[in-house]
Length: 397
Ligand SMILES: O=C(O)CCC(=O)C(=O)O
Image 1 (cartoon, rainbow, N blue to C red):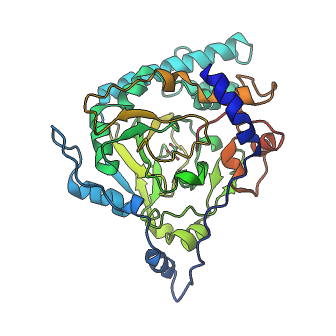
Image 2: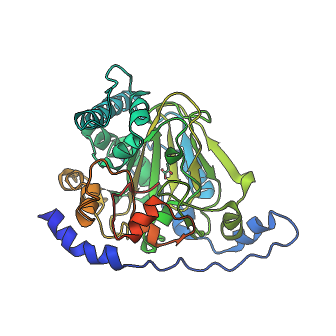
Image 3: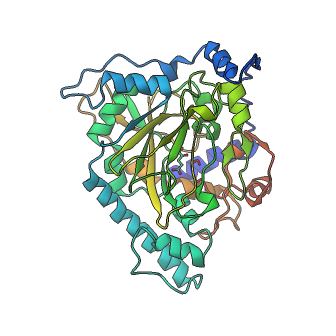
């Protein structure tokens, strides 16, 4: 019923909407040194949502983040907490991942697409072995949009929500953009180029602080492709020019020169965010970041989860609303996952796409974020958009 309503309401929007271009940023004069871009950008009036912390909250328990950590988050646009999540909860998540991979293996096998289900392989390699038999097996996981209970528990866990309260205040909703990343080794599709999360959303949310927690389910390092951020690139709140799409992927990307002009950051601002299992990288929706290639021999599994104030625009193209998790004026508020976890965003988009695209095994992905940016590199994904098909929401890079 709900899905049908959303389908009816959204089809015209998805097919016809053309996104407004992001607000133009005055070109910055280069001056006499490469860092003059940064100096000039620093003079841009910063967007307070990304740079000013709310008052330190009062909770009936100690807050998980120190004042210095909160300050770092708002000043630099990211925060690494090397030991934050209970690793037993991550074990549970990995068990759930095993179930998701098993489901894909069975569907591929039952339809004759693979010869070996690789049942004895561990979660660190099984999907990669499937990928070798069916290119795009990991895309099937990525676009599945299944939100297991184990992920829900992490997402709405008290300690994480307390930290989020320190960033956005006491009203908190889970944003519909979340991802399980199966970063298989040596895979272009799993190497996410420089971007700001805002580039995947409708510009209406650019004055909403959205907090991302990037949570590796295994140790994340330079070898298996951890996240890199461009520190300070969030300060103006501007979304730099992105182009579409990188290589044979559906990812939009941002050029370092453009970021230097509009965000005032360059190579010297790169921070490589290695962290052990149990760590969390907090980011915001304006910080430029990417993940590097996985050069190891094992999958780098991770989750990225997001929160924002439920009263503010979320930019998710009217596809699905955030799920309220906490309300400051209702300390006993009980959140309800049923509607949120019950609406499968990929199914929603598939229902809006052509018959042909409604194939579980489809590994071409196209979506509304592609309409916001110039298509400088057409590929099968952008062609699918041009053909009028929205072939599954990977939610974002
Ligand atoms: O996990 C990755 O490889 C990329 C993550 C990312 O780009 C994000 O969370 O926005």
